Image (cartoon, rainbow, N blue to C red; front, top):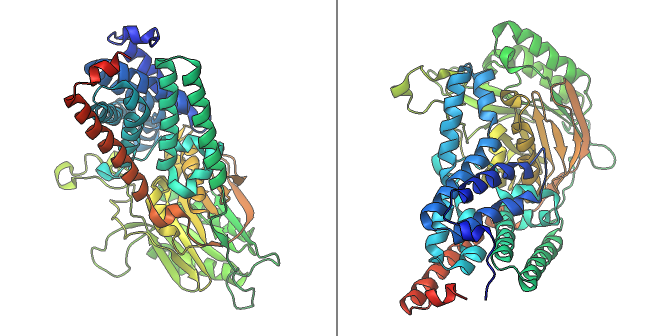
Length: 532
């Protein structure tokens, strides 16, 4: 006869809602910069347990409370962004943040509703299969619904564990599924405490670790470096490594866009660039110059880029761009790569109310305190590798795009190196820059490429193909991050197949368990099973 835990006897009490809220608030502590990784297994286990044993109404309330805790802590930086740098003030910032958290809290509720429906109130399959599968399916939905908000996925917290080897195989969502399955096992051991259930947790963890270790392979290969010739713009060291220099100008957001500081910013980046002439790649951050490309290219950027090429390197910078000489040309948040020819990457995943205001015709200029400082940006084309030279192609992303696994994977196809430029000054000294860096690390591990991450105020870093930070600069200091990197070629399974295999597994789990539960319910065996 099963032994029920104390909480199971109070499953219809408001206590379970409070416990779920606390568990949700604890979950963000599993991610950077706190990195209490054990919480990524325990916090979902608490929710899964409550969701499986409580009446449906209370389970949904607990799931919503979990989401309030999870996102109330995990995305608290939204308040900082709007209050300190958006000009909205504390009241507007508070209202926007609360509304955003309330919206995001619906996702855990949706996951629990789906998991309970598929499990048909049968506790064991609900805990072990349907709740974990539903949770990860909802994480996938968050990558695209309403343009997407792929934040605080369970798999990110596993980056510094043996499960990190799963990244190039199944990506962050596949890793989330493994984490969620282990959380379900933990919940089962609480629901039915015994040596057998504890052994199941140990066996499950051991299998997950073994798979992670077995999958921890290079998955990519060293690419031939560009030839070091007098005419080549990417001359390399004798050992085949490229020397890179990431420039962190550290211009506070409250002065960055003021016209009076434009010359100061130009001069600052020029001086930092002179100090690193001879590096193979010199990378400036997102919108390093808060001016249109056409305004600064002829007399400043192009002569400077030419000087960098003469010294054997390439200059890469974030810059707002619109087609010169075209009436009413759209504005793009872009990266200019001054290679054999100047190439541009145009940001595709724009931040609503951060880089453009939806329904502009309806709201007019009333929400500009949330929008881009210059004007609404236009969405760019589907990401693909950007040619720098005949022998060097770059997978480029801007800021928040590093949070989109498939966007980075598409750009990584055919690319030798990943470049992410960002301006995390928007988030001040909050959790966001650390969470953002963690996502960039995951993208490097998924694609098995080196990642160069240049930011305005930090955290600038060079990341190796296993997601490890090999060089990093301190926040809120003007500095340069210098390192030697390799060019890589070849595609990981995740870059090749993406999330399609995982989605098929999730659909099979949810659909299969739901179908089986429906048939068993028709045979009248569910009630007997619940009494076991």
